[in-house]
Amino acid sequence: MEKRSADSQVKGVSTGTTILAATFKGGVVIGSDSRASMGGEYVSSKTINKVIQVHDQIFCCMAGSLADAQAVTKAAKFHLSFHSVQMETPPLVIAAASVLQEMCYKNREELQAGFITAGWDRKKGPQVYVVSLGGMLVGQPVTIGGSGSTYIYGYVDAKYKPNMSRDECLQFATNALALAMGRDNVSGGVAHLVVITETGVEHVVVPGNKLPKFHNE
Amino acid sequence: MLEETGPEWLSEEVKTGTTIIAIEFDGGVVLGSDSRVSAGASVVNRVMNKLSPLHDRIYCALSGSAADAQTIAEVVNYQLDVHSIEIDEEPQVRSAATLVRNISYKYKEEMSAHLIVAGWDRRDGGQVFATLSGLLTRQPFALGGSGSSYVYGFVDAEFRRGMSKEECQQFVVDTLSLAMNRDGSSGGVAYIVSIDEHGTEEKVVLGNDLPTFFDQ
Image 1 (cartoon, rainbow over the protein chains, first blue to last red):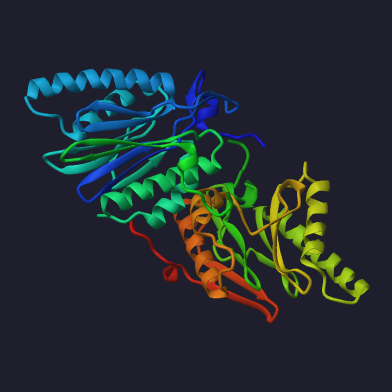
Image 2 (cartoon, rainbow over the protein chains, first blue to last red):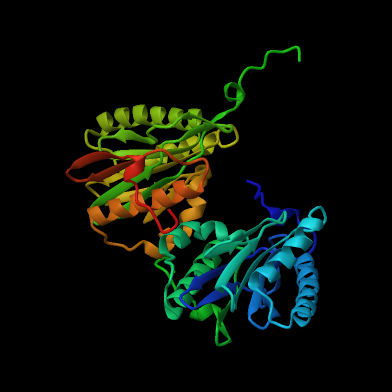
């Protein structure tokens, strides 16, 4: 049976992937797997980092065509640093998401990339936004994306609770990534996680052999 | 337009785009399904029971093309009746699954149905078999249908061997509810069938009695 997905029509290197972001009490966790594949048969990189910093306390995750995503995030990073100089204040998370949205919408015919933006700002605290393929922007408490996300919709719906503690949320995100990597053959490698709070940013990397194991392993 | 084409649901193939699940517990099995049957974008039956009896303590769960799946179930039901008279005792779950597998494999190009076979027999207790595309494999749990993709993560995380019957029933209802919330081709009510050495119990959980989660 043919596997029909947006990734299989992407030319070149695609990040068949699993990305997610979730808010907890006082911050956000944003994370991804680390596999880049070509055509679903060859893993071109086992350790790619799909969590990109676009400003001090704003990160985004990319899914879809790797080339498109890198080009857009590079442009967005520049835009945002210019914007924050002009405003003389760190940019709002929604500003970062809007910059990505504008690019995705204006170039919707050529681009094939979706983003999750997460961060902390002084106005609204921790936030998560998702910019979908065509350029729609939606704010949500928790969101997942990429090919591996299909398998964890049920898990995220059942297990996410608003206002979790930092450690609970980190465990939730690690579990979700591990489950998706276990079922999706184009997601895998290590789990990259970033925890963003008012005080700063912390990177957590969970190597493959330290990921939580579930009953069938 | 010269032709009278009529409403599109008359010409679309009827599929049980669906969520089906079967889980083994200590002493039996629990099967569950949603109740939506769709033809393209229309729901042609919102209360169909996709859990079909093959014998007293053996059921199957239907998914894929509604016609194909129902036909396979009816044929195997007949074949099992004959077989159980011939051997003069209750058939094994593995026999039922093999009969389903034989049809699925022989007609794999023409048909598109996936049946999960589950039941209880005296020899091996509760068993669940998957017969996708004509393979035959025994598993502790099996998922199927379009809605199953969304709940693989949940089932992987929450399944434990040796659950009690009630825990298993609750687990099946939770899983079906999550899948029905995310899959457009699954919905309606949840049908649950529990099979153990004492017999078979059928239950329906109506839409408003289904468990809800944080975003509802």
